[in-house]
Amino acid sequence: MIEAYCPRCRLPRSVHRPSCPATHVARLGPDRLARLALEHVDRVALRHLERWGIGREREVALDLDRGRLVWRFEEGPALRLPAQLIGAYHHADGLFRWAWSMALDTPATVVSTRLRTLSLRRRWPAFVQPSLPATHREALARTGVAMLLSRAHGVLEVPFSTGCSWYAIYSVRGQGAGRSGRPGGHL
Picture: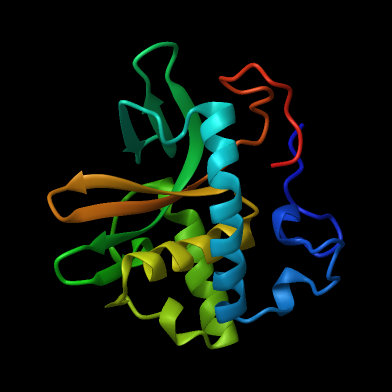
């Protein structure tokens, strides 16, 4: 079983230096969470490539009805992982729009909606505006905050139309050895 999160602080083990910082994830502000999320995503990207082939796919799609990301490869079976849509990024306008504001009738936006509720309580303005200016990296960081708070394992940008991409989080929990055949372990 992959245990990517520390049971004590609830942060990804990949951002521990060298031991648990003991500051619980719930006490951190959005800027610190965004920095930790980017650090985690940067560190695990190569591992996800090696273990599951994420990044080497022929095609990737977000199935909103089933709440799944589906990767298709040149060889071998497709990889299907549970996923949540967090937002959409419009490249030309440089705008990130939260999934909770899109009026999509799908359970694949539950995490986005919960993040909004939490953000209202904590007074995190960037997470309660329906859309806001962002660079690609800022869109990734905002999605990464949802990843950390929901204890997911990765963030993925999925192109869905010309100039627009979905930003989703996914979980590899229960995937074992992955496509590489290597045993599971910490991410």
